[in-house]
Image (cartoon, rainbow, N blue to C red; front, side, top):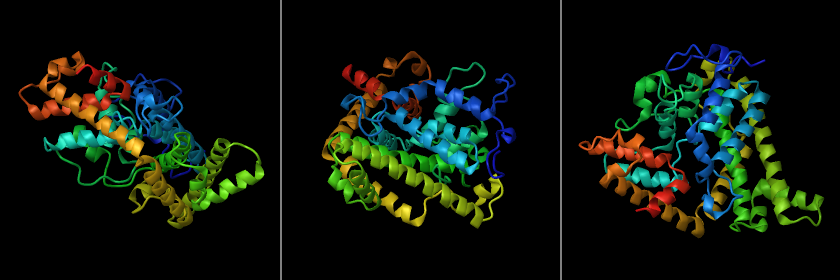
Length: 379
């Protein structure tokens, strides 16, 4: 039974386009999940960079496997809090659908490009654009026509949105700004999805960074909570290899983070007398958050990963190559829009440079790493 402050699918606020032919016996959130998983954008996540691009090895996380790990963590937390695990899973599965090829480097490149047209590119806004406009497989509407709660969760999973860029924000499209009430906090399910994202990447990026040779066991032992766990695992498993020690240790610290999050969120709900979804949305701070001690570790591991993994020389070189690919592709399509695929070419208004830039940015943002590299080779 769901808690009173959960998003109950029975009380869903509906969809942008009313539908009468939905699957019987399935909740609105279960239908949303089916549409997300069946979408083209979701399949493309398999070949989009999480940290390491796909041609660097088969065993590193990509955007798809990352999203699945986030969804798994979000379901565990949601079930413990008696909130909608289906909704939290939907938000987790869709939250990265707006990422371009080459991860944040690709996003930075597109944003730099769009600034030349007094525009901007933001992967969160692009995810909403995909979900409400760019997926075009349904005959009666563009987008996936997801429930209000799923759209709200994707739009605001990182918190309220203020001062949206007026010229290029899909969140102003079809009155989404007022409908989603962007200046308030999101549901607890969306907050859980957001912090599950942190738990997932803070742990799997250690695994991938170690696999790539960017960090060592001894370096990880210098991190407060993690170092203690590594020593305990080594002591309890004499003679095992370092990769097994790493994997066992990150499973343990991940579980500690999940337990801490559940206990602290319960504490906050009681402390602030939270009774309804609206209480959560009206609260001045997120309620799903770590305790003070776990938040210190959270910041410590993020700083460590930034310095030792994300900002490493090898990955910095790859990021620069990715940015170069994005810039070259954009210039190619701006100079020769007829080289775009037919479904994108028909939207181009050659007399309107700003509109053309938006369409081409959308097209490039939808590319996987693999597709972008192959298109670049043809320039």
